[in-house]
Image 1 (cartoon, helix red, strand yellow):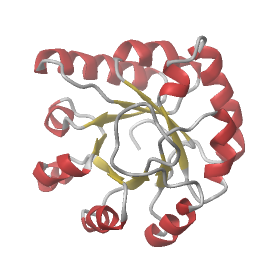
Image 2 (image 1 turned 90 degrees about the vertical axis):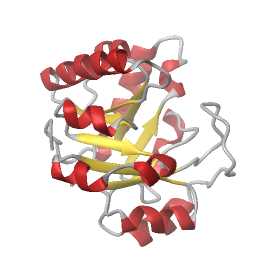
Image 3 (image 1 turned 90 degrees about the horizontal axis):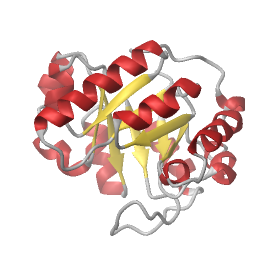
Length: 209
């Protein structure tokens, strides 16, 4: 499996409607603290938009809803992994991405046989408080050696100027949140990300793959 080198993460279907049509091919919907009915509506809307724009949608955390809504991909953190039914996820045909922050979490993730592994935070991040220190881009090369052909996603504190640094160190994809969503012109910033990741975009990933 190949991931697009530009991995956008947003917290609403509104963001997906706004940015995916610009050419985004990989997006995660990461929503916190909403009622199940609202979550379902957001997932349905996001899925429809992504289908129209040849974009792979990844649902964060809510694997049961992802199954019920016939999504293709789910991403779990380590705490979510402890309670998730991996058998049900696989039986439904969902691909699986997992977060890692240290060696122990990497081994736990590998044992779950995911379709990609994310490492973070690479740089200091304002998205949330984390107990882990920034890994630095150099650690990506070590992680890539451990995961082999499994796609590796770099996340945490990334911006346009840091894309080359993480992709050249072995990451297959660079994930971004606040560099776009807090930018005065998110559309322009998205286009910058798309342009900056073009050298690594050698194979188009069709929707649902």
